[in-house]
Length: 204
Ligand SMILES: [Zn+2]
Image (cartoon, rainbow, N blue to C red; front, side, top):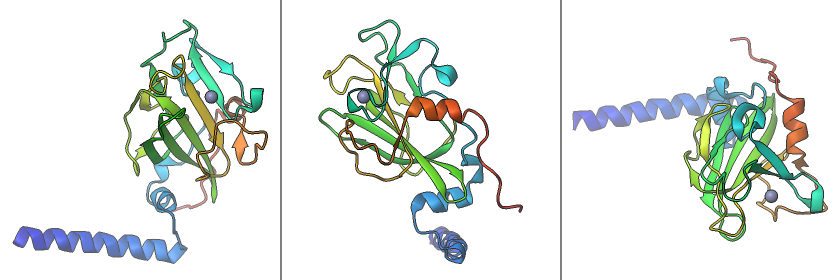
């Protein structure tokens, strides 16, 4: 009984502290609270999601914009299903916001929100995964394993579909569209942001 009360008391204390912190600066979304409390997960540059950090041994079979593709399709240079089960890494430090099986042509999906500046976020989305090694609400470091390359239940040759969005929390979408609002060219974005991009705003 004493143990239960003590646990309840601890939970209450944490709730009050988090509550007062978040009220003070008006944080509403889970990722905002997460980044406020865990600044070590702010983005510090971006790497490629396969053959990390430089995509050695992989090629981009369908670049952003080709056939109205909204992402990149990373494939192993061995072709076919030789890359099935290969490691997929987070492109940057961030907060895991979605992990689920979207079914159909999407298969398993992981989404990660990256804090790139004060009130600035981008989101990376990894699709057709064979396995998923992360949970919603976790922090993840750049280059950390998040899952394995899959083929969405055998619909395609195995590959990683990667999207990078500058509007976070958009609908999953269809992977192809002539309207590219909210979507970035992943390779261009990664190549342009390899180094530290976060400017420390808080001094304490
Ligand atoms: Zn694709």
